[in-house]
Length: 229
Image (cartoon, one colour):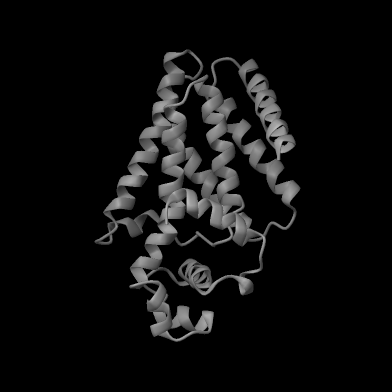
């Protein structure tokens, strides 16, 4: 499955209760939940299949191993954000606007994620066979820092912003992953995500007036997109 296919498929899943999902997706759902609760090594394939209500041979028809399940979850947690960050790092337009655009996407991605990604700890990337995802994490960091360096060069960001932003975004994204499991009001969640993005910008920009201009531009883009659909 490609990243574009994963994104499209998640939109479909969000509209359905997990009990109505196809078996493959219910395996991912229960595996993610159990890994978040017990850790990767603590959640056995028996635990996963019992939670789904299938036998282990049925699970292996969909995933060759528990690590294959983990790899699919890591693709959602690392590969797709890395690709989106890289795309925006190479796009045209002001760096401050592109970083804001990425943050809005990132916080929505994790906030609307129908799978519990709290167990996707960076420590898991030392497991043999997960080299691709270690590379995705590094690619994400490089892409975000590329946008920030472009902003520093353009005089939009403070010089000490480089290297700081990835740490801040990781922390906020993890908090969004955590709170998304309990947030029931989508309007409140969306307002919090928008506020978090503006909070980060305030710590980075050299000219505070940039924040208002960027926020207005983002709202205009959202309205145009909503109207188009």
